[in-house]
Amino acid sequence: MDINVFFQELDNLFGTNQIDQVEPYILSQMVVANQQHDTDASLAIVNELIGFYRSQNRFEEAIRVSNQALDLCKHEYILGSIAHATTLLNAATAYRFAGQPEKAMELYDQTESIYREKLNPFDERYASLYNNSSAACFDLGQYDRAVDYLLRATAIMDAIPDRVVQSAVSHANLAALYAKLQNWHGAKSHIATACDFLRDRPEAAAQYAQFKEMQDMFASYPG
Image (tube, rainbow, N blue to C red; front, side, top):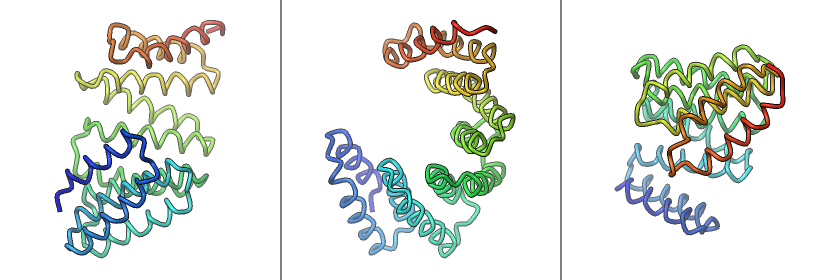
């Protein structure tokens, strides 16, 4: 199965706003991948289904499919692989959106254990993991840990020259977290960094406007 064709058609459905066709398409392609005994394609497709259900607020279905995907990892002897880590990450995020941050952190921790074995410490996939882990920690009331994860995410993204926009988003996320904690000095510092990164980037004009609005709002607070 050509997984690239699957992703191209999926992107086309989203791009043309044919949302009602997304689930039937994913399910039909899962059948094809299973019939061809293409484990890699099956796992990639089921991960897309997890994300789709999550985006539609269908959290119980996202968790159900997540557990099916993790079972697939186990039965196909791909535990400890990057594909397994990706599945753990998506499953964890499904649990987080479903209001189960404890379970989410359990799976995020498992994801990080695999990353430590397989990835360079500055691989940008860590940044995605840390952003999600930070949100789960915040939900658990573990605010210092939430801040620490976002600091790690920004350090990774800042070190990748062609990921300036993503780095700006990480700084904005950290600024928003500091604002929730009423650490206005930290909030102002990181939103200023986010704005500086995007100021002269026309392709990110919408995000820059959003971050500038945050900066103007933060300016009214002391610190």
